[in-house]
Image 1 (cartoon, rainbow over the protein chains, first blue to last red):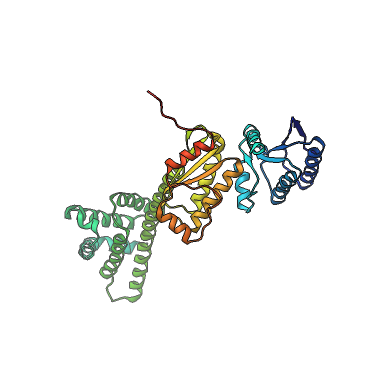
Image 2 (image 1 turned 120 degrees about the horizontal axis):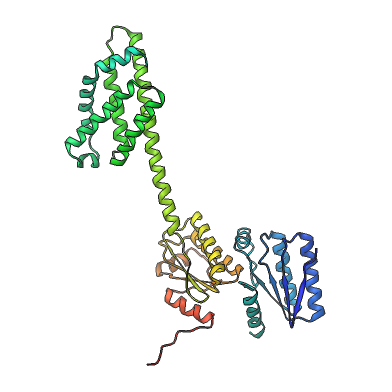
Length: 118
Length: 273
């Protein structure tokens, strides 16, 4: 199962619509980085609206994706994290520090614009 | 209870009642009991003792029902449980004294046990009812508190305020976090102001809960500003070594709103007349 990555001008849009398992997450990490390399994107929005569950491993992978993409020169914004997911993450002590977040895709794109300009 | 004892109790009814009334008068010290008039006090006592004698002739469920009905009335009137229980203890003494005759010990012991069982059953039902009514009160208050607990109020586009009033414990903190997060999504807030003006004490635990809540808010994509930090709270926070450096704090809600407007690129301007 691979997660589709859409290109929009300088950005990559990724909507995660399934609960990620470890294999999918790692595959996803690889795909995103390859796509950034291929397209030379400057920003990535990962939308997690339909994700109900994130475990510590997935959280780590997501954090890694953000760091790795930053290394490759693309800013990443996580959007649409559900309240339940946020509570679980906080309870597990995962704060995803330094990772920009936004309420939804729209605000995520605004945020990305800000980050790139600022 | 066997027939013989029942009859005996009924024969001695008036002596037991009089003795008992005399005894309970001695510990009528509760504020509530002091405040009611003597007639009401006497009448209720008499009713209580009559109710007890009524249960003598009854079995099982009937006893329970008679006492339950009467207990509900006592609770409504606000008679203290300790008075009632002491009353029951006196009642046992008085009843046993008037029944025992000292000529036949086995019979006396039997009497004693019967009276004991009877009184115990009544006491159990009384205590059960009283504690039930207390639990009920506590439950209702808990619900009321929950309803008042943590509202999230949208004040401008994308700006919401959550005023917190009263002590924050773990259970409430959990609820605050849930309300905060669902509210943020529902109102599409970008900035949330948590107002702790009404929180009397901020210790490490409360600070921990607030930090967690604001981290969670950040994850769902909004920002948190902590407002309403009174001087004494600022002192405690620093003295306890709590690090609130990661998110912005302001002394008053007004200042918080100003900086929230700034963050969402709004500002309040005066209209020129």
